[in-house]
Length: 248
Image 1 (cartoon, one colour):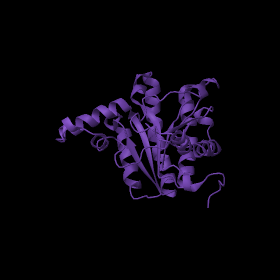
Image 2 (image 1 turned 90 degrees about the vertical axis):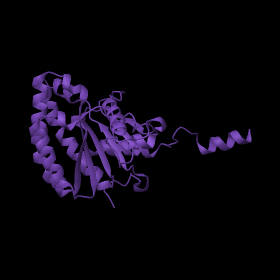
Image 3 (image 1 turned 120 degrees about the vertical axis):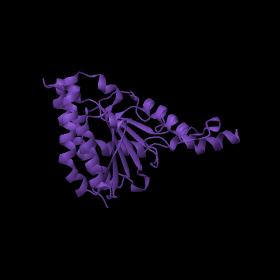
Image 4 (image 1 turned 60 degrees about the vertical axis):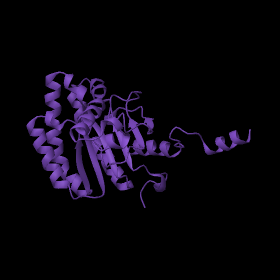
């Protein structure tokens, strides 16, 4: 049993992905530097991880830093990388306490060496945890991912003349994981922002108006409730409509 009776555990998504948007605007609205908003965004990351683990979600993917984010001012990028190192170091204990395994997707080798080392250490420490897998999308872009997957497939000697979705998925960053059933974006923006374009083909999308630093467990519970009220049809039609069409 959980503390969230409004959620039907039998219809729980196995994989939730979140575009954590609004840190900069949150800071600007308070007359602060953008990094202040990123720092404030650590709390909802912790709450999202704890909530999903408590409910029984098996995979949570957080869009932490995109390939496009490298174009931001150097002072902001450097501050973000420093915050990443500090946060991973501090939150590893939280991951262990909640039996959460850490994983990273993206062009990890493009991160500063200190970030790579801290990330690798946390992944190693948490590798045997089994309650949930937390994926951090770092230096990640979906177009990059798909291009890299095709390159890897070709180098591996796959039959490129008879290329299939199943072959491609073997080389994606998310290989071995289910596609996200639920994609949440905060800050009220209605964009995908080059995030998991292949994997979210049939995901339900829920837009939350709050900026990411203001997000708490109750907001994520609301997003899951919205998801559970929808009927996933994967490009088809409702069963009742199909029957009516056959009779007409």
